[in-house]
Image (cartoon, helix red, strand yellow):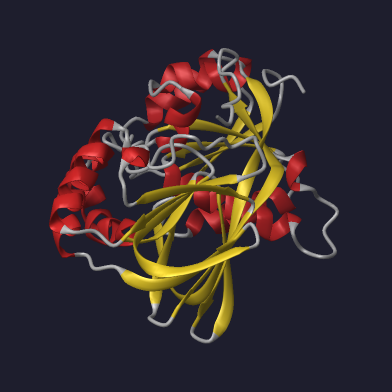
Length: 325
C-alpha cells in the first residue's frame, strides 16, 4: 500500500498532551494540506468517544486510521476497530486496518517504543513515508458486576501498584499537563502506602500463589512516560514479557524505586520476569486492572492473552522491530 496516496481518517483528542491539539488545529490542518494528504478529521468529545468513532469509521469502509493523541486515545481506537472486526459475521479483518500515530499525549509510550517523532510535522511525514508492520495486541478479560468484560491493549497492562499509581495520576493529567512528573510523584507516594495482595498467577503450565505488590504485562517496553518495567518486551514476537514484583520491605521499596528510575528494575531481588502468551490471575479481593493507562474496575479471574500480528502500524523506516533478548 502506498501510504502517500492512501485515504486517511484522523481521530484527534483535542485535549490530549502538553499542548491541546484544539489550539493547534489550524496548524495541523495546514500541514496536511501542504503535504497533499487526503484526510477526514474527527474529534473526540469525551472519554470513550474514540471507541465509538473508530467503530463507525471502520464500518463505513475506512481502513487507514491516524491518531493525534496519546496512549489512551490509541487504546480507544484499537478497541473500536476490534469491536467491528471481531464480530462473528464480520467480513473485515483487523489486519486490513493500518494505524498511524501523531503523538500528542502526556505519556507517549507507544511512540517512544518505535521512536516516532514527537514533533507533529515530522510525525505526519512519517505517516506518509514510514513502513507498515504487523504488531501484536493484548486482550484482557475480566469480571465486572458479575458479568464478563473485555478490553484490548497495544502497549502494557497491569495490576496492583501499577493501578494505584494511575488512580492518583490520571485525574491531574488534563489540569497539570506533563504526565511524567505527575507519574513520578505518584510512584514515590504510593510505593510507601500500597500493600501487596495475595494472588495466584498461572502461565506456561506453571501456577504459583504469592503476595504480589505489582505486575506489568508488556507488549511494549515503556509505561508512565518512559519508565521501563518490561525492558525485554517486543510487540512483534507473539508473547508478553511480564514483570512480577513480590511483597516489599521498606528497604527493598527504596531499592525498587532506584531501579525503576534508572531502568534496571529486573535486577531487583523481588522481581521476576516471565515470557508467556497467556497469563491468568486469581485473587480473593476485588482488583482493578489497567490497560494502556486506562483503569478498569474489575474482579478476578483476569486473563491476559497475546494475539500475534493483529493489526498494522506505521513506524519509521529506521526502526527495526524490537527483538526479544
